[in-house]
Length: 388
Ligand code: GLA
Image (cartoon, rainbow, N blue to C red):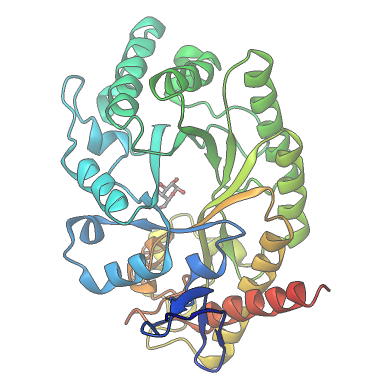
């Protein structure tokens, strides 16, 4: 006669979590779930990374292992930007975007499209358009073709990127100069019609700034007052070790959630290096190229000292404390890249530096910050289990 056992194991010493399993006496294998960002935070939010050509083409197998193990959502770092996807009025280049979507599908990930409209990395022919009717026609073709092709496959669209100035006013991009703010409504209307099930997001940097926050509120309320669908706000979250203040980020999360928006951290990274605008009192050079090769601006070319690892871990712990506090309002946390060696912050705003902004080092090993954030989550889960 077969006897059935119900079991629930916690392999804490191994750091492995076993979920409940039903077994008979002949089957002894428990179902194990390895700790990873996506598993540990799965009740809180999606965890993701921006992926580059090597990931999408499958050539960077080492990073792909990290992506598969740690993340359940991806964003294309560059390949869906207008200049690559739609380089000429009548030609679209879908090769890489198709591969990107296939990668996400293969691993059952939440797939983000980045980005439908952005003034930067746009095809030069779009910047030459000065007639509003012609511009609307081109935006329509762009959004209908792309969002239509990936209908039901891309789950979230960054419909519009960086349409605001730092004071919250509208950026005077060519879109705005030619069409006024009507281009924003048009973009969201078209995206909603092309794929009614996709989540539609406004994405920007410095969205913790009170003045810029007011700009976002105005933009969202304007769309809502016209019955136009917008689902979320993407806070890019390109931060430093000291700024912005957690309270500023918190106030923005609260304000956006109050509008009914899901909030996401869409491009998270924390620079470990000084930047020209941090040089308090010192003359900031006219051109950032003048800082290239300056050892003061590139203090850790041969490795990240332990003391700095701790500072980085402290900063990430503070950020994730906040994110966990608002997990009900936060949909997704996406890092802008997988490992430090591939981060855009090695080349911006000063070329040729060695930065340490992400969770995985140049050998794809987790940094102290990763361990700390995982410990934070474990501590919180234990407190919750104990009913505290
Ligand atoms: C912005 C854009 C991203 C990317 C980063 C830098 O944040 O939204 O697509 O270009 O700048 O890599």
